[in-house]
Structure formats: structure tokens, C-alpha cells
Length: 273
Ligand SMILES: C[S@@+](CC[C@H](N)C(=O)[O-])C[C@H]1O[C@@H](n2cnc3c(N)ncnc32)[C@H](O)[C@@H]1O
Image 1 (cartoon, rainbow, N blue to C red):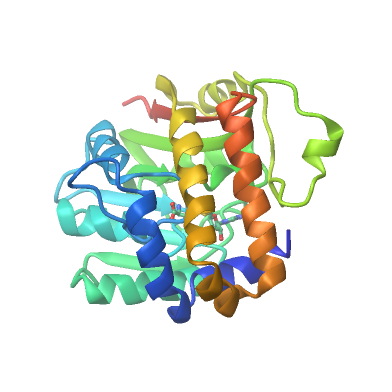
Image 2 (image 1 turned 120 degrees about the vertical axis):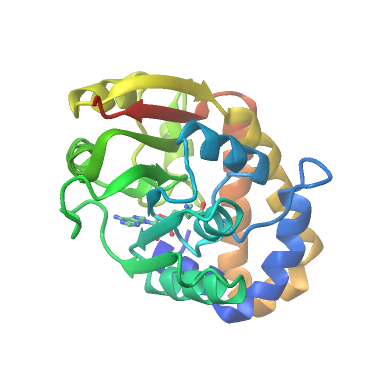
């Protein structure tokens, strides 16, 4: 697949908003009330509502979202719950999109978006946040053990963390599959149990782990179909070569999820009081 930075620049651009909204509406609808929030991961509105309750988010909570992308989840939490949300992402285009979205939803005073590399020490003081969320970004972030220790430092005692990891190896993947066009890109595949161990090593109590691979199977397939249905518009936006790469990525994700060889898990932890 083409350089992930180029792809994120395209996906988070203003020009992409219309077409992604049309595709996303069908992709993320898992019930009458489910909307496309502007997310690029696999988090649906139903899942995000569960996340809000698992993180015990309230109106006066301070939430940090790591790898917030275009701000779909952050803006939803800020507008639904009233929570103060700080979102950080490596992508400048993602941060610009998140700011546009917050403005359009009238939550710019409850949200703050900054460009930052989450694999490095964060520019926040100790005990600054009540909760940390990271949706489908962890697989891209290096130095996971240090990242979790950093979340522990910036979290208040009793605060919670929740992240999803869509690259847990739960079956056999051949070397041809791992190096095929459209594979995980600049990501990290981990064995089952590794995240649980790192969460505890960083000082958190592990509250729960949930297998959410079924969502990848469904969503990756729908994205693939959406790209096919809107092929002309997608080619106009990203070009033929990038579209091919994106399609083979989602087809690869679909197959591996369906066969439960690469799984998506959600982890919830708590910093002891
Ligand atoms: C699959 S997207 C998910 C975005 C968002 N959480 C959502 O669900 O819409 C992964 C995001 O992680 C970001 N990312 C990758 N590496 C990062 C890093 N080291 N620090 C911060 N963000 C990073 C990417 O720029 C991208 O926006």
C-alpha cells in the first residue's frame, strides 16, 4: 500500500468528506440509530456508547484520546456527554479535520486537538486526565510499554484507560500474506496476552478484555463494497493505484478477521487509587 501518511492526508482532507460520509453511512450503520461519526477505525456508535460507560465519562471528566484521527469519536463524546476532550494525532491533516468537525458540531470550547507523536513523552502534567481512550491506533504506535507507562503518569488515580488493538495474532499468517500489498502497513502485530501483560506492568489493574473481531469482519467487508460501489468518485479522490491498495487492505483484513487469524480486542484498565 502507498505511504500511510499520504493516505491519511487524503482521507482526512476536506475533499474526502462528502464521499466518506456517503460510504460511511452504510458501513457503520448497525442499527437504526447508528451514524457515521467520521471515524477511520472500526469503532461504531454502539461500541462508543459502551466505551463512554466503561470509561465512566461524565460532563466534567477530562478525556485524552490518543490517535484521534479526524476527531469522529472525540467530537461525539464531547457533544453527547459534554466531556472535555483532548485529542492527539501524528497526522496534521487529521488534527485539522478534527478541528473542522468540532466547529461544525459546536463543541470547539470542549475540545482541544494537537499534533503529537504518542510514542514519545506527552506534553501533559501528572494526573491531568480522568480517562485515556485509543481507538484502533495502538497497532501503529511504537514503544507500547513506554506508551502505557506515560498514560499511567498523566492519569489521575482511579482513572481508566481503554484501547482497541486490531492486530492480535490469533492464527497462522503466511509470510506471503504478511508482505502482500495492502497488509498492515507500518503496524505491529502482537501475540494474545501481550497487551494484558503490558497493561499490568505499567501499573494498571486489568478490568476487562473483549474480542471484537466480528466488527472488523463486518466493517472491512462493507468498506470494500462501498469503495466498489463508489469507484469513480474514489478514483477521482485518491487515484487508481491508492484505491487498489485500500481495497486489497480491506479485503485482507476481512479474510483474516473472518478466519479469526488476526483479531481485534478491547482492553480496559484502571489506575489504582
Ligand atoms: C486507524 S486510524 C484511527 C483514528 C481514530 N481513532 C478513529 O477511530 O477515527 C489510526 C490513527 O493513528 C494515528 N497514529 C499513528 N501513529 C501515531 C503516533 N505515533 N502518535 C499519534 N497518532 C498516531 C494515525 O495518524 C491515524 O489517525
